Image (cartoon, rainbow, N blue to C red; front, top):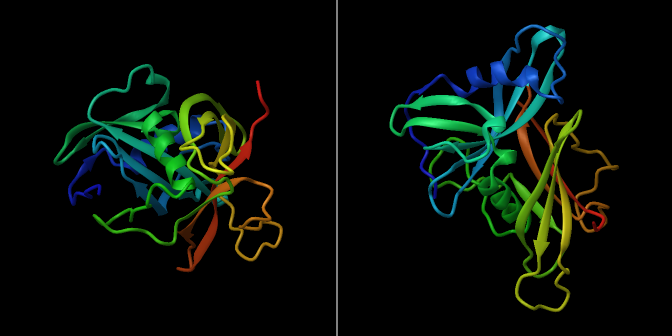
Length: 237
């Protein structure tokens, strides 16, 4: 399990995001510097123990409006090849030294573990505690068998999210295992509270073939809950 260090990080992740967020296509701010607060998130483990993986939720209260964003981070001890466009910044970790902080949607390790979370092969971890599962984070995938991502194909940013086109292959030969094909994973960057929304089912009747759902804090201390990622079958090439 990933170890969460009680140490300094300079600049902080919120400081890095304050500079990075306004340049994103899905950022809803209307000018001026973001005013950010961390309100939730969770971690996933890298099976190799090399890359830190965190899904952070922040709110921005600038400009008289409140918006909630999800930013998947990957933390590396060396630059990721051919990913300079996805670099959020570098930071000095009090124990691990220099860390390269990436928009994790462009990191193959994070994509693989996100898919593992969807299919029940990865256990979400607490954002702030070592070796502590976060049971409020749930994954659902409609397929049977164990498909695995073999190639993250394209990453496309839109006005409210990022679409990951991934190619999949079937796992062990099992009756009902889905064939090789393509899936689109929509990572919601702008989060919406869908608790009690009958139009957003969370089960086998859902038109999506998979999703990840999690909580975040509201200003009054209650919890919002919504979808962090949704999966659809992609048309063949």
